[in-house]
Length: 98
Ligand SMILES: [Zn+2]
Image (cartoon, rainbow, N blue to C red; front, side, top):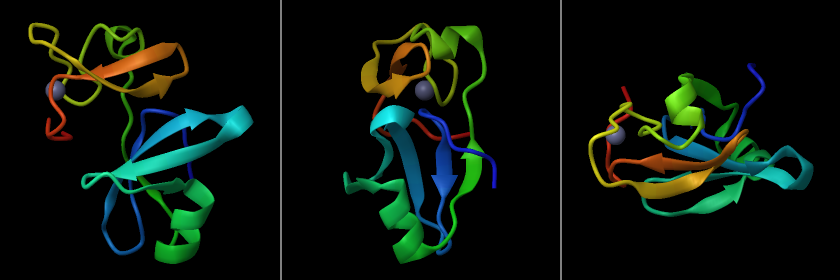
């Protein structure tokens, strides 16, 4: 499996989507759409291996300028955890993952 990074969106073995956040040094966590948060290890144990669905890659996304899901820059943003280069944002809590 691809090594997970903060800001990745992944699917577990039964199809739940999870947003990866945190820092490797302190253990990566994941939160789902209804706000459940657990460690990556716990989710893997309960629901099976996690598969990468989407990873933000543009400089604007990783610098917190653009939405990490859709890439928009022209709308108010809400915090969405920390990535490798600092605070990340989405344009809304329900912005669809591409
Ligand atoms: Zn968006």
